[in-house]
Length: 256
Length: 326
Image: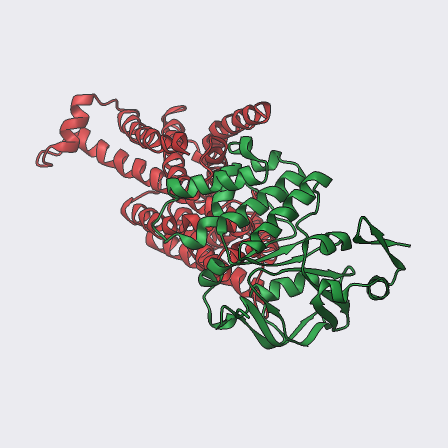
């Protein structure tokens, strides 16, 4: 088995006195696509930020490609690990193309300008998220869903081996939800390692191979999604009755 | 992006033209030939013309450097607090300088003492904001902005208090200082040096600033040590502001509006925006100061009045144009 891209050893994460996980050992490998599920306030975003090295863990440690995260510079982390935030503010004007290009930041030296190749890469990424004709548009004229797709394009331009995504399907219409998840699944199949916070259980069933459930108060459950997910576990997770139905030999979960 | 790059040479030409205009205009009119001989020729024969020119050159270069400093400081401050409404004075640096300057005027001090106390006041205000905003542990842009705005209001109250207790004879000088005035300018070298230093130190951070305007988290995720860059921005912007305030009092509007005008014409990349803002801010202040000393000559107006009169319509025009093009 390949060594994990991102792993944690006895990881404890806390926010505001609330325990999100304790002594958690995570191993996210190349080719795997993980879905994180949990109720509001269970700490999904905090966990993701901790895994990205943006906040220190309460205890334990995290390593990226075998190197302890706390000893790595932000720049070298950003070359291997990318994070799509839940939302990105844009208080100042900028074009869509300029915004996508910031994804190249960790790869360029201080005196380097974005090359023609970088611009090609950025244009290709915009094409992948159906924003080809938007290059010169101002970011603040975009809709919520278009901004989400722009954030994904920025992440793709960063070309990290480890992708963390915080509710990537927010604001997206049905077509783009599936297009985005398909694109991420393809990335995983091509050797990327993906961990994403999702709210739709059926997205996890369809596109993820592994799942991490955050029950709050430090209880977690993780493993292959086909083994972990059941109507009973999900009912407990959301404190709401969930039932399983089969449709054309595929599992679906829905609220009862 | 390529179109935006063309603005830089244009702004350079604007800066040179504004400086030449400033040298040629005034109560004693000079001809081109006199300008060339005085600028280029050896200063053996000190004619009236060359003396006038020397005074005008010092004043014009001081105006240019001050305008450049304010615009650069404004652009950096806007990124630091991530608020388009921020200007160089938003954190109360100029308030501290003004209180110290007015106190020394009240005590009858002038010249180097005035300059020295204004600069110390600015540094004190800067340390106060930084210390209080930091509190225990790290500071956030919001906390910094709130601390700065509240302290600026406090400085404002102290300024009003000093004005209220000052004798009438001091009033005119104090008001000119508060509204911004370049007639104090003795030497332009320190201000120009600070402008150059500010540009040299901030320009290499240009791409980091492009990322940082999207928030600390996004910056962190793209490999930027936000707290380090923000500390650099704070110290740099404060020092630039302090230098400008010491040179010319508080001149409103340049630092707020010039960075936005640059963004509105398409210079959103900070590697272009920072030098462009310095050139444009410098040119605006040179033109404003030339008008301030010629419109009602021999009477001189505070230059802050003119910067607002020039800047307000220009800014509103560009803003309207941008809205209608959407």
